[in-house]
Length: 172
Image 1 (cartoon, rainbow, N blue to C red):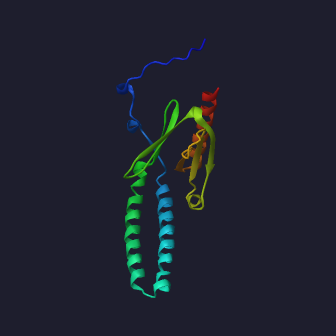
Image 2 (cartoon, helix red, strand yellow):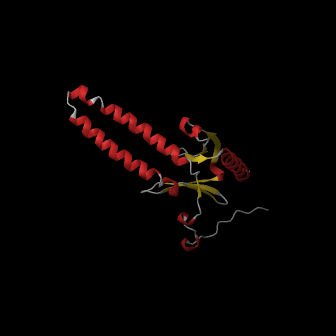
């Protein structure tokens, strides 16, 4: 007979999520991040070229381009720190994903809530042969998806298979 238990849990007995050992994404994922930053800033600087057409003055465009260049340098410098903060951790009953440099956030999805696991690539990640693992849960909220970026095909497929198997076991 399988009896459901509901034992009391004490706060001191619970391991904080911050103490988990997170598996990092591939180091080459930083190249993907840097290329995306470059593309965004090229587009922003190109938009700044429209300023002289609207106001017939070059100084505002130069100021905007200088501010964008400084912001670009800061973003590229911080992009290399992303590697230290992105990662995922598997526990007995759930998967957690941590991200954020200044405002760290950890998203956790119980295996029993997983409805779909898929692999994908985008144009930039394809250059570095890196995959994203998308995990969709049964929640009706806007945050019903967990995406783990920057995995090799082998690691992405292994994680996908593990999540599907765990979801099947927990749902039986």
